[in-house]
Amino acid sequence: MNRLKLLIFLVLLIFVSVKFTATGRGYVVSFSNYVISKYLNTKEFISDKIDEHISQQATIVKLKEKNRELEKSALLSIAFAGKLNSILKDNNLSTYNPNVKLIRAISYSNLNNYDRVWLDFEDFNKSKIYGLLYQGYAAGIAIEKNSHPLGLLLRDKNCIFSVYIGDKKIPGVFQGNKKNLLIKYIPLWMNPKIGDDIMTSGLDGIFFQGIRVGKVLKVIEEESSKTAILQPYVGLKIPAFLHIITKN
Image (tube, rainbow, N blue to C red; front, side, top):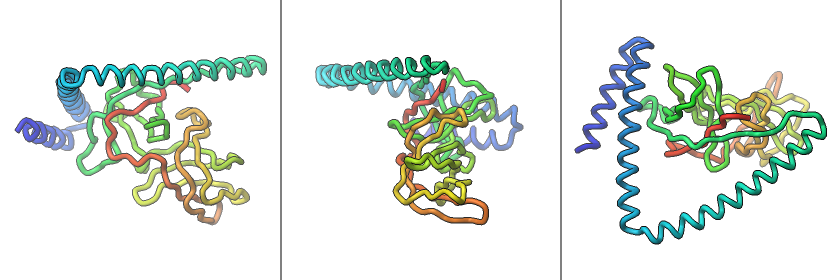
């Protein structure tokens, strides 16, 4: 019954948001996201307490094991960053210090669009475009919409960022598409191959270089450039949590 009430409430909010002006929609989105966030926080808190009560000992063991894995990963990351920054310093280049943050996807922005999600991200800079990651792979971008952070997942047509293809780092531009995910504007004289890995280039300041996006399924030669169709490594409907790149 509570879920039905929440659904009715959200439908009414969405209806009002469509009818109101952009400013009105901003207020509606703010209130809607606040309510949903509080609901999810409460639900998560209760669920955590129940799980803790039922299987506290097993949970502690798993958390300790996971913590050891994360500590090892953190040490390796620190060592890698230190080594890389040493090389950059020797070549009079700026240090490399990317930062990522775990955030929550609250809800779809529209009931009929599964490629756009509102994000619970307090430190959002409205003038910036952010890269989104899921399980270490590129998952989309985050932009400003009605003064709130909106996640555009890979299939959204406005999800655009620069990439490299294969070991030769063939340049291209990723663009979301409902039917096929595309890498556009590949120079005609370059030859991406089926099965080539596609990674972020970092040239656009959205992602840092080397995040895997997918692999080439097909290459189409057009009048002034080539276009590649790709198979993404991430197939998302609505993830509960994502990582957002706060600094490249």
